[in-house]
Length: 255
Image (cartoon, rainbow, N blue to C red; front, side):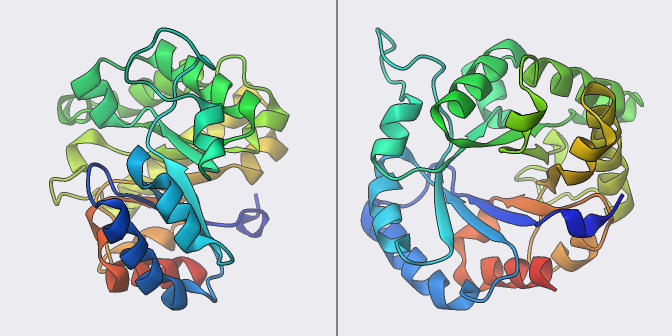
C-alpha cells in the first residue's frame, strides 16, 4: 500500500469552547499560518459558531465541521441538529461517535451508525471516532474493541461512501489526559483498522482510507506520530485552540 494515495487531514475539535466572535478571531489568526498546507485543514466547532466560522474561513483552505449530527432530517428531537441544518450554515464535516458523546450522552455504536449514514446521505463528510478504554487496553483487547466498533459504525456504508469518511482512532485513555499512545502503539491500531477495511471492502479502498490519530496529539509529538505509515492526520483537541500549536501540527502533516 502506498501512503501517497492518501492526503492527511488535520481536524481541530474545539469541543465546548469559544463564542462566535472568538471563533472568528482564532480562524483569522490561523488562516495565514496554514495557507500553504499540504494537508486538509478542518475546524469542528460548536453549533453556535458554525456560521461565524464558515464566514471567517471563506476563501481559505480551512473547512468547517460540526461536532455531532442527528440521524433524522427533522422531527420531535429537542436539542438535536440535522445534517441539512448544518449544511445551511456552512458545515461540510461532522464528527460522529466521539468518546465524550458516548461517555456523557449515551451514544451507542448503533446510533453512531445511524448518524454516519444520515450525514453521508446528506452530503456531509464524516470524521468517525473509535477507541478503547484504559481497562480494555490493559486487558489486551484493544483490536477486538476497535474492530467491533468499526464494523457496527460502518454497517450499510458502501465503499464509494467510505471515500467521504475519515476514521479517527482515539484511545479514550489518551483524550484530554495528556497521555499519548506511542507512535508504534497508535500505528498498530490504525494499521489494524486498515486491515479491517480491506476485509469489509477491498484492498484498494483500504489503501485510500484516511485514518487519523486523536489521542492528545500536540505540537511536540505530532511529527513522530504522523511519520507512521498508517497515520494520516490527527483529530486535535486542546492544541486546536492555540493558533501556533495547531499550525505546527499542520506543518508536520504537510512535511
